[in-house]
Amino acid sequence: DPSFMGNSSGEPRYLEDPLITIEDIKCAADYLMTLSYVDEHNLCLLGIGSGGGYAVNAAMTDYRFSSLATVVGLNIGSSYRKILGRENVRKAIMELSTQRTLQARGGKKLYAESLDGSMGETKEKSFSHTDLIEAIRFHRECEMQHNDPFLLISLSHILGFDSFHMLSELLIQPLLVVVADDETTESYKHGMQLFYMASSEIKNFSVIEGAK
Image (cartoon, rainbow, N blue to C red; front, side, top):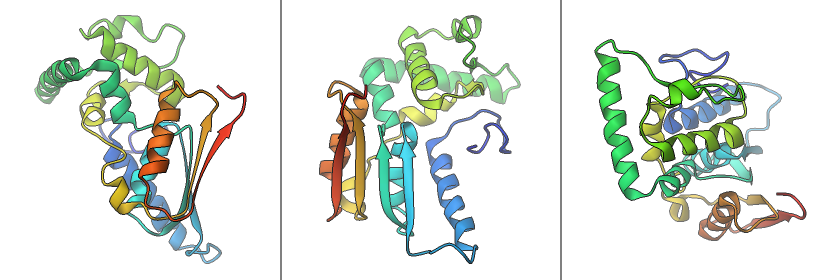
């Protein structure tokens, strides 16, 4: 589990911060480097969904990962910003900033509830942006696929994050991009962007026929 989630430690509970998650990936590599049976020159990194975007960022800033593969990888920050649109992103950040201040003063933390069928309607309705709730719903149902709560101020970290920042300059490892057979999906579009922007000399783009 990432920091703050599930069986992992860390406060505040249920915070998702892309930069911390990327550091978690690198810390996993740190641990693997201490194991005598691990070939440190053949460490492949695989990322799925939004984890694919995190894996891209981790690989481009840690060359211990000798190769990279993504499966329906998503640039999570870009996805949220596209769902919301520029003006709503700014409004959301303003409200999230206010929420952080309230929490710092001892106020109640807000969560997007766990996947229980209702998506925690009561708590979601306490936040004003319907589009933002839809973005959370997309992330929870399609990407995270676990039953932990989701601390709402996580969105302030996600909205300002770009998995592919410096991609063309820094990603040089062999790359495999796997996408579903649907050109209209964000994961397909992001996969194409990743494939063409990467400076990897060896790279492949694989479409799983019939997969949606």
